[in-house]
Image (cartoon, rainbow, N blue to C red):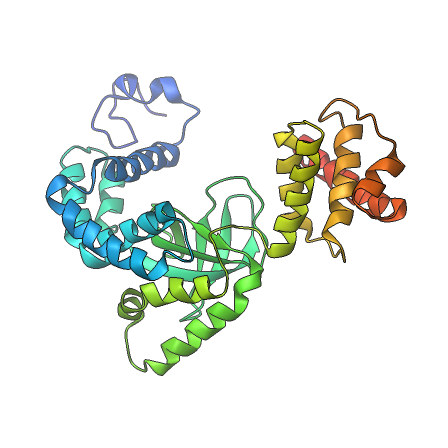
Length: 334
């Protein structure tokens, strides 16, 4: 048992009574995680500095000329920001870490910062998912890692992800976190990733990270040419959601709760429907009967006719949504 006047086991150098005694329910790992998250967040708030801004803008403008027909300007700038810091000017990131080390007392955090010197680009396919992490296979090397999940939103097996990764601080060599944005690609674009692997094979002997740096712009151009625009949903899933939103707008209804629920349903359940509107119709019936909005002045037959589907098709997906809701409720109460 730790005495109140003993040094705190978190490694801060302070006495236990002056540090973590009032936080007995918080583990040392949680304290370390919070500190590391602060380090990451602060970096993007403070950099790039004015003296480095023009260099960043020069690279960003070059990317915009190549990619402006595919992506929004804000998305291009965000992608280039990580490329700039971690592929073109890693000295900025490393200098920032050295400054942080002078402010931090916890040895557990300092050890992690020593392992954070070289973030690396990672493109992988999700092969398994649990509550805290995703198991991801690097498409160029078959390396398998555990990548920390950034939210509770469902992640389907089979999607691809892109980010720069760092060790997550647990000292487990296979566990990582994303430095900044963790980008998910819908399954519509699987061929692009296969083509990128083939391009890597053509560059025989080139180191993976050097290839990723040299071909970063090519990678995003390949996705753009395959009609990727930055969304996380397949064309089919987007069609379902657009049909729901169109109906709600026509009826002057706002229901973010229903839309978010259907998003999770589509991603987790991957319903096998012939028509997007059949799922949309089922979702509208589900939303009404679950009280997501005031009852419509429409019969169930009217709803089906609005979407130009049969009542039986609408009811099929209404029941699937109902079953999914029951499953989620059971998991919540366990």
